[in-house]
Length: 233
Image (cartoon, rainbow, N blue to C red):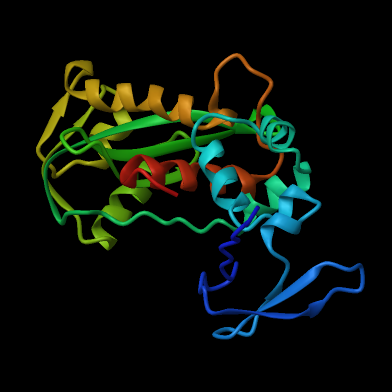
């Protein structure tokens, strides 16, 4: 029986690989001729967390509503590995357009550590493309709405009109824009709020899943928003 192994460098994904002796514990060592990285093939790994494709699978499970403990259990890896993968994530979103016909604005309630530590997400959404254009975190007040307005301006985004509910801060914060106000005009973003709560486990309602650290909280949402906009992570 003949078995062929296809090995790629876990760092640069090059297939320009050569054998480079053995590790002290007897396993075959490989070396990438391009980036000089030394590694053990995935087929010889004892701990599943070291698998070269494991990080991408962890990220995908995170944006499909799986929690930290769930991923660790299913993938037979440690919770530390899952959290370390989350901390390494850097997925900023950038607008796909400069001019939009209508942007819907809404807020979403989340918390970190305990329910009294509220973290409000306020964001702009384009219904026709399903794109999250920009978002900010803060308190549920006028200052946070102004932060979103300033961020849209900094990104060079303009729109023909703004759609929001009747909250005073939205009406005041986007004064000067053409506004359409009422729940009838925010059907798209209200539906997207439901999508976010299904994609991010720590945003589930009536569950015991929540972030303990603010950094992890923001990273998880960054990852989910990138996935919603582009369909991959």
